[in-house]
Length: 259
Ligand SMILES: NC(=O)c1ccc[n+]([C@@H]2O[C@H](COP(=O)([O-])OP(=O)(O)OC[C@H]3O[C@@H](n4cnc5c(N)ncnc54)[C@H](O)[C@@H]3O)[C@@H](O)[C@H]2O)c1
Image 1 (tube, protein in one colour):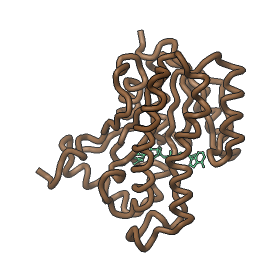
Image 2: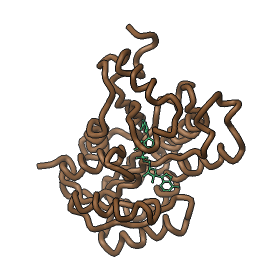
Image 3: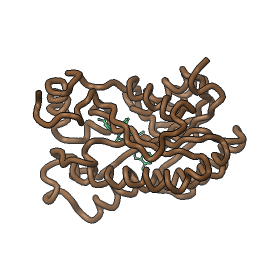
Image 4: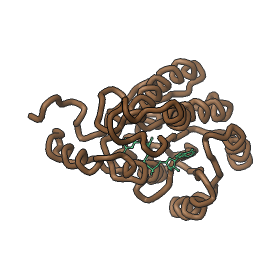
């Protein structure tokens, strides 16, 4: 018996086999969930259809999160397949070119700030609002992905750290609003992982090396390890956990100087 038997999960954010969302999808499928996926644009469509098929899913829907229309259409179409939704996974972030290098005060612009916040934080509220009617009364769970740059200033992470701080506050406000309907809302703050998104952050390679050297477990986390925690947090075993940011980072957040 799997942790997620009988649950239906919508996975937003698969772009490659390195995507954190892909690790989460694999773990959720292994634990018995049925899956549906979104893809950001036509370029990603065939690839995401292939990933979905690997996990026995034929439901793939377009979703560019700056479009309210596409967000609403995802859940309208989902209703044709499923009569309810138990899990929403939000695993997306974006900041325009130039925002993720140099010092924060040199790099930040009004446009960069607004775009990073819209795509990396507001989109979780927007997807949550659209998912809400399908989740009512189902012991449902929403999950997003954050990073330690939300709570500490990290080199080059810049406006994305500010957007992740907003996302983490979003988790708490969404949890407070949706808790009375039985919907839980949580985040995983993952350690650094080599993905398409993280390759846009200057100095990522150095940071991966640093985590290997100083984190308590002396290594980096994998997408499968993030997936396992995601499966737990969205399962009924985590039924009293909401509004929480859970670190899955080999313990890096716990240290000050390397011990
Ligand atoms: N890789 C890391 O080191 C790391 C660490 C902690 C947290 N995270 C977070 O994990 C999440 C997933 O990132 P990832 O590292 O797996 O990278 P990824 O590149 O595999 O995934 C990013 C996803 O965001 C989607 N996306 C971007 N803009 C979008 C838009 N406007 N509309 C719809 N989708 C859009 C992309 O299509 C892609 O699927 C992000 O929130 C990221 O900040 C990543």
